[in-house]
Length: 119
Image 1: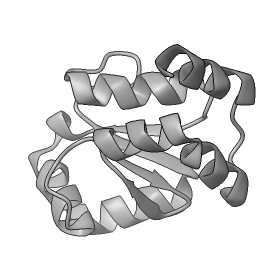
Image 2: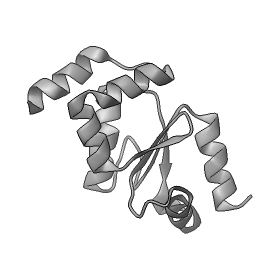
Image 3: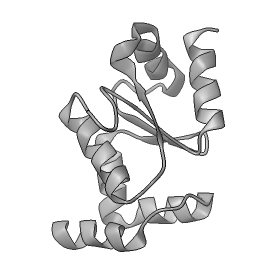
């Protein structure tokens, strides 16, 4: 199976996927840590893919999304964005709206606390 096929399979079989450097329990870069931290804090169930473990996946995800940086968040097969976009969406409430529209469970109180702390 090619890297692109593996990526397609992963984003199809999981509601929320974060392609990141490291893992959700041990991120290995600040940007990956921030996005994983937001998702963990909001109680979102997500699959994590450590791009450092496989150079083909690391390059393949950039080609797949036509997005040059890691991390990359996918919700229900749709590319959402990287750290800056996810941070913006979290603070504006757009991420909540996306999760609600896609039927992804999350802790609304935790999400509100993030906005309060950064408002």
